[in-house]
Image 1: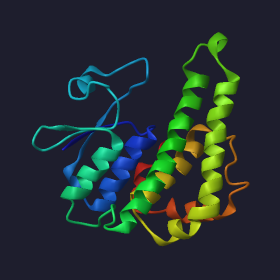
Image 2: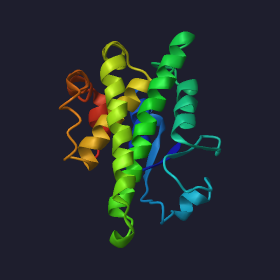
Image 3: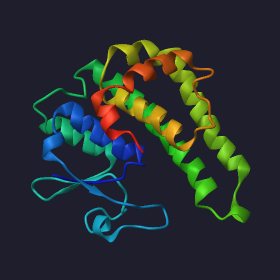
Image 4: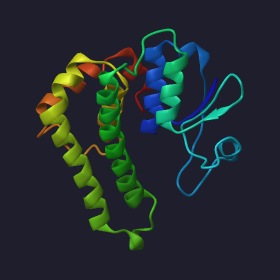
Length: 202
């Protein structure tokens, strides 16, 4: 299998970290890619019209995208640990994944506003609104999810770890730990898992 990947993408990281947890690392060939909302990689567009990463090409030559679908696909073919629980537990894991993914969407929009948009076109209130979504997400993690985070390793927990890691990587001045000590304590431990260490953005 071939995975179009960028170490800077938290969604690509989520896929790669899950593949390692699934025991699929040796079946994936990682293809480095550099994309942005204004610059697409033709080799990706040839298999995924959006040109986004992550994009997976299966052993049968079929394209799978986006990160949520790729993660479900990998879990379905893995003979190792499963990251999508069965029964009612599945919905907990999926909701937590959505919480983290939506906060990551906001983080990416905030970064694009600062880094990609020409300075004279930037909208500070837009960026502030995205950062407020991130803060609300961490408030919810702190209030409702820390017990779950500490007791599970599933797709939702991996996504939450990728959220924390991305903020440390791209928003070092945003101190999410200050008002969220329980999430911070969990992440300090979770970030040492081999799958998280191996996929940490440099």
